[in-house]
Length: 317
Image 1 (cartoon, one colour):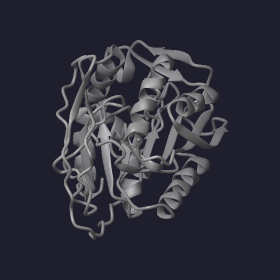
Image 2 (image 1 turned 180 degrees about the horizontal axis):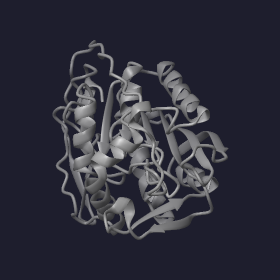
Image 3 (image 1 turned 180 degrees about the vertical axis):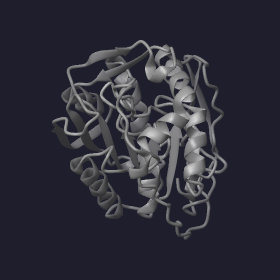
């Protein structure tokens, strides 16, 4: 999604997944008085992805655990832009999902249009600091030097990071838990694929992604649930696939908002401890490559901002 204003809820595809996957957690202002002019938001048009290989479909299977359907499908990879069209998982909002997920959806459904007007639909200097934008650029450079493959923006909100990645030639899919936020993203970025889903139930085949960005998408996830999120992120990353996670930093404290964005709905943000997030990623089989924490510097920020680069291990088993 976008940087959630410090009470900041966040967060923030190309043709490869045209109708395939989903999840969300916007990164938005922490204060109802904070605003970012939509005029400064840069809307980045996605580039056309090249098509190369022949499609190869593989049989899929589904595992049901604790009432949650989890994809265990082999990717129908082939032409960047045609992949995943036949592997989309059904998504049932509200079924066996935690309360914080339902609440997050309700808030962002109610405020999607206002959120996009305030934060914008593209990466901008008003919403991201120089270090933030440099890390996104570095992530693109890392992907360009790695084996090609699809990239996901999970918790995409209005598609800000998805559009940024698509503009740099990535084959991207945006995933969010809010249908109304996805509608905004599709309207703003018609050349990018967007689907509904959540961080712990991504409708993507296992080991299918070359890269994944979670841009302020975990700020509504309680610390005790981070492990489950990391398991799902590791599941969808291909061997040596890359991950970039951004979030508001703290010691795991909760910031409660009784009237989130004027919706009369309670919403809680969590300022995660960077070491705890890094530990959760490592414990679930990801290798942390870099960890950065910067002090608040933008008008809407009241807490440090953290960024972690990680990589999936090499085994394809």
